[in-house]
Image (cartoon, rainbow, N blue to C red; front, side, top):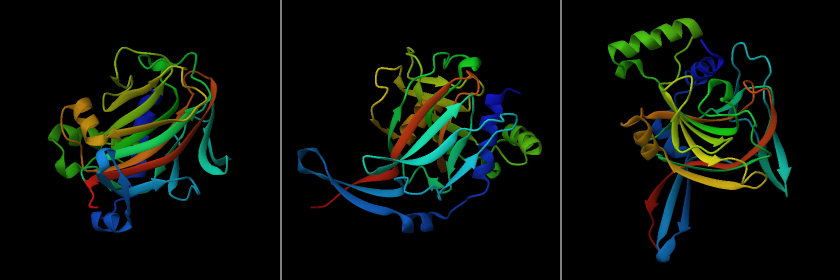
Length: 262
């Protein structure tokens, strides 16, 4: 089994440790009211709002047989805290501890910046399956809702790894080069669908903001609705290409939008 598949499988170790009640999730949510075009107001109810003042809400994830790990740390930029990731022929991830309902909170927004792309990175090849930065939305596998075939497959994976792997993932990547498609399956597993939001070096060195509808993207990628339980992860990896790069992430928010009142 390839290293990339092991990495995708082992992300599930973290998901098995956290299962929060939706009532508690809603109680912890932050409420914002923002102006919208035309004078209307949009209310955002937030379940995750990460400004990287601390990494207490994140859990490191490492992968078997990948001895070198990406370094994640908080750095200040113009008085603002941001997450910095440094990869040097390495791979590891940070997984957020909070589990949320993708149906109740279908929007995700963040800012990211890269130092450079990877010269040998290629989203269509296993040897090029490295990216300066990627944001995962990871969906939890539920054996009670699985088919017989899925229970066999995931049961075998659990026997090997000790925990269930994710049911599926959306993988928002900064691709190293331009591709004709916006959406590609990961070269190691079709349970991880990649959205190539940025492609190439044109925007390297400056902050770029992204906003996505998780439900819409999942339906585009998999042709159906996702499992309800999800969490997010951040990853910078260069273990396949053996290269070195740095990336930054800030203002990562998972939320829902509602019409607000004046």
